[in-house]
Image (tube, rainbow, N blue to C red; front, side, top):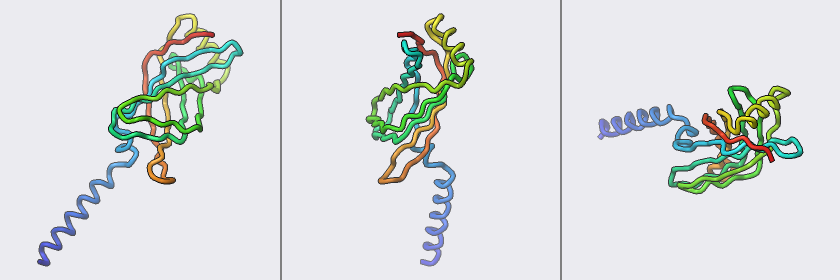
Length: 153
């Protein structure tokens, strides 16, 4: 009996050690991805960026906050902070649009060049804060590259 208890205790410690090596955010974020769907310069000079979160999982998510760093043509053009909650349904997607805070004078030049072409290669680095249970929030980084249409209103 003592041998059986010792074996169970050892197994519990080993399994506990293996699961502690994997971060919660890695488990939660499995399969989640982000992409930019449009960059639009408005008539007042503001730049609106539309992005989409894809959720292939069987559980829904609630993002309490989203932070994005956007780069076009390899140059960071600005950031977006979205503090309004976003529900991401299971096996579905959700879109959101935000106003870009430009990263300086070079950002306007990059956007003008992208407007002339009608599209641009992008990189988006995002951090999402996922509400897990009650007030427990997990911070998850997501990145993506691709090509996005760039238009003017």
